[in-house]
Image 1: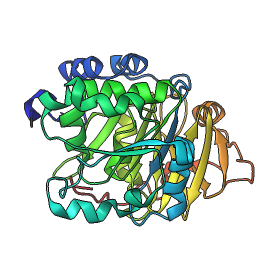
Image 2: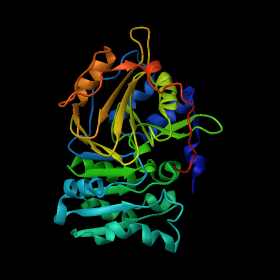
Image 3: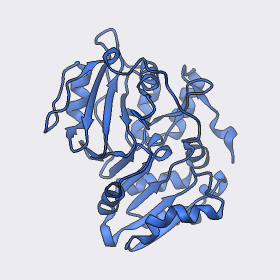
Image 4: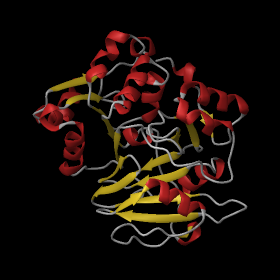
Length: 317
């Protein structure tokens, strides 16, 4: 694994680290790497594709079925990337693929390597050229970016979204969705570039279960142009253009940092609720509550929620 090509980026980025992020992120993300804005950047979403971003833990079957549906159902061409899993190189991985093997889809490909050279080969990335859905299993998000960021494989995954496909993932597969990725918070909070499938954001997972609002707010303090999405276990944030919907058993917490113009803001979206990404970003920037279609709780000051809770995580999520 060419880990040296993607050195760790600490929470206080230097100029060189920003240049690294800009070099490997997609064009729509590059302007986010130029500095800290006082207000969030304009809302952006995948060009034509969809995202199913799961917070980890035990996933209700309806979450993965939603992914299959968005990928085309029985006509879906699905690629499952197992590289984040510690079991990816062992026989134990097969048992963890039982759900995917059982699906009646047009094709299923399991994709894995630990070599950046292999990941940059067109033959390895070829299954992605006809994929309608790509799923990332959980594990260690750093293994995903260290292997695939800036390679032909990553470019082909972005192409899946560009032609209207769906990209999903759980735990580590959620962390990689944003242009700034939380790598770990022990022994210190550390971030690095993600794949940037959802520009203008930073995604955290296992959010309520592991009291992670504190660490997400710290990241947002260093990246004031981003909106934070904290996704709890057993729950998914589904992104279709500017339409956000929450599916599963818990909630998604939307956060922005404080600035000289506004206080920090937090809004919770419960399962079954929907919101407009553009309106949500604008409202959070102005510290105004935007009720979802069935009325989510109003925005609160960050200090009124769990933002002071001690973060808890490990590198292998």
